Image (cartoon, rainbow, N blue to C red; front, side, top):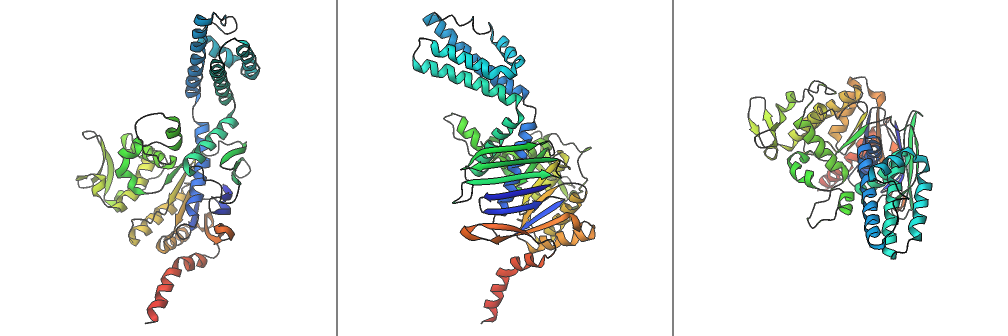
Length: 431
């Protein structure tokens, strides 16, 4: 696969190959995370579009039809409007009627609007009836049009992941393209943070993506599961206060809970044998209804009382037994070296290389020379070097960066990461 990005946050231009293991190297605030979140946004929109939505769509359609019928019935009692000769007698009949005549829905709705417009009722009532008809048309159209659903999901993801700050500063148009060997392609434009153009060709080429921002999710599950995403906050009218989180955080929390409640240990993608490193596993304690950490010798601890490094390996373990890894599940991990001693950074890099060799597509961002060197070493040891791609950010004008591939010269990456230490060494020799 290949991801092309232009004018998204700090990224002026990037062309990223996702052939196996992709590593983006650079300091903080250099646009690394933007690449991961853009990839997650694109794949998750595809996932949401392809997921079984017939039940949800029907539920929404029935809700709007019920609203329409209630308003018409109220007006009929008050104004003696003879509307039931124009509409099917029952709501369920109207649902079936629209589904059987899906190609004619725009014309049908237009005729109903003309009927509503001719009624001698107050303007607000006309407006509410017209709104019901518009919502009915949208539901039917979305159900029959996967491209329209994709555009809707992309807009949702842009809003939730970037809080309407998708386009680079001083620019009005961003472009993203995700393709797979000319078999499948998604291309979309975001103008002033609104998804304006979408092109898709056979977009069922990857099922899902998981974005890991921090292993500390594990001991914050209760809070994250009750949090709301941007769209949920905007659409949910409630006097209650809900914390707002990006989609990738809530998605991660939900997957952790699903994996620990119903682990599929027989059909996990890879036998990672992580317990050999961590000497334990995460389990679900039915008594406390909480996720816990159980050591191989039987001791049980709350996640908040174990080292952060254990949670990094535990996340991988849970994603595997939860069936959230595999060749059609993109794994995106932002700076996995965080909270890890160099020894465990090297071990985690080894696991990533082995996973990628088994067919797991992975995108990693890092600013650790230990982790980078470990990826280089194990990819060579596993004879997997040709499927590992490395990129660094190059500064451009207006505080933007362009990602440059350095797979043939990793010295550029090590020089970039060593620069702060070199400056300190120069100061030290001056005394």
